[in-house]
Amino acid sequence: MNTLSALSTNKRAWGLLFVSALCLEVTALYFQHAADLRPCIMCIYQRTAVFGVMFAAMPAMLVNNLITRLIGYIGWGISAIWGLLIAIEHVDIQTAANPFFATCEFVPNFPSWAPLHEWLPNIFGATGDCGDINWSFFDMSMPQWMIVIFAVYTTIWVVILLSRLLVKRSL
Image (tube, rainbow, N blue to C red; front, side, top):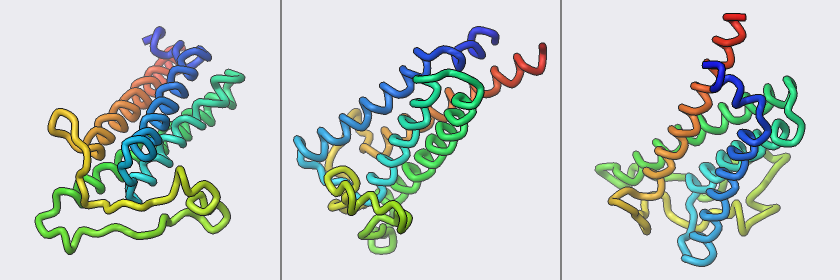
């Protein structure tokens, strides 16, 4: 338990979290721009959640102290859980019995003070349809893989957080 708890005080562990999310973002941009797979609204929301994990890791990766770790835990947890819920909803849309009733928005619902789809349309612009399955690997669609990825992020977050709390409590 002490080993797991100590991971959160290690800058390299936070760096690994950052790099894993960065790799996912680079992969998403490759699929969008090189493989010409158009992202839908749900894809953009999942991409935003991955950015959330990435940016949550940054403070503790750069300056690892109680405050930066707390920021990291909060951002990582919110982003991982939110991404998981969005990915599950996306799979529900793709596997709906009647696709006419399973639709998604046309324009991302970002806050008015941060219209990411207008500022960075090559990253946050949605041009695809949520119900389309244009890519699969081992018979799983991209949103199904994102469920796995966000479930892993969430599980690691819970394990690290619980180990940290249990070690603090036993001291």
